[in-house]
Image (cartoon, rainbow over all chains, first blue to last red; front, side, top):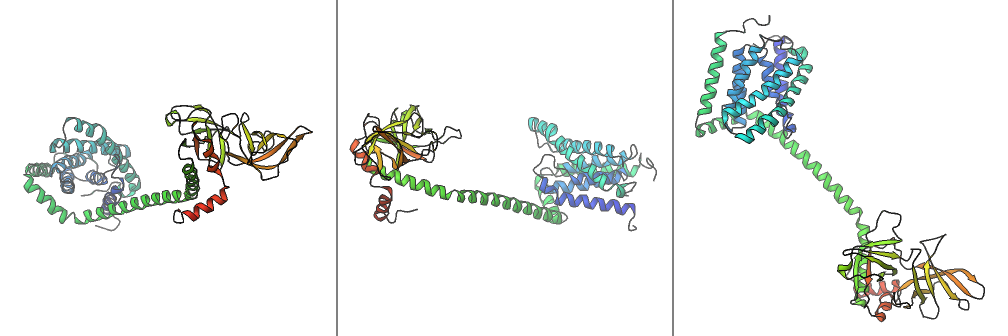
Length: 165
Length: 295
């Protein structure tokens, strides 16, 4: 991989997002709008990869996320595998560098991830499940979508037509 | 790379996707006894740097919040410390009140003055005690230094006092020795609210500055001997008839924070000794009697 190559720039952007997840998110953790930078990084990667690579990346990211919050190990991996695969498939349909498409897709992916994960884990029931899916998850999805928009604007030059795999 | 190329129908992608899904589901189906150690192993190995960084960031955040909280507490203490002189003054006032209380023994009600922001504060005062505490209309209100006013309105838990500075206030007064009698009222016009007038002094009597003026007990509202103030000088005279003197008040209604409200049954002969001798000598005597009783 050449220094300054599109692929390297993409990985640099992903590392920055990972660092934001580790350093910034603890400061925002109490806010319902706290963005999930890791999900943004996964989607940026998957939207520039083959669906299989996106699915594998989603599986890994999900499994590691589950390990940090081990309520139902495997539920996050299951959800993000689907999200990663869909994101990789999305590249065939839309322009991955389009800001509006990215924001809408990140919002939908964040909410869908929560829905799948909650359904798979079975940790919440009726009322609490409704509150999570109707109130908390959309709020978190808004924050994540906003973070993705900012990241896309910041790293537009790095992410443009950068194949990850 | 052209968009849409090699994205549909790749068998490798499908296999990878299904494999990941199956592994995820198998992981999810594992018993908790296996999943927990598995997650712990990941946290101890591949996730250790991430967990460490997040822990340090969280600790940093907690420390910053602790500093913010400490600063707020420090500011609160600084604010409290700034009020200490007022507390000292208030304490001295309460001590003075207790000295009066020791002599009066009973027949009074203690009350706080609830100063208001209105322009009328100082002419009328709101007290924190009312009918339930035993306060009745026309009860004299005194401070450690002298007369403050008279109760005009009584509610269950509060009462209103007409201070001596009120234009309608009148008190039958006399000199300390009981040789000269007159009426004390608030000064109007220049220096209104600052000094009193001692009216109706017989023309034949001359009062030197510094003469103490007290209530005379005539009229039955104020017991005899409550200090009103000291003569400051002559204000006017009606030739061959009477003189009016300016009196520097013993108590300033706008400044008192605690008062005693005398009950009707208070013994008249116990009131005057409660204020006399003069405050300076009394204070020195109290300091000698209770040398360790200081703030």
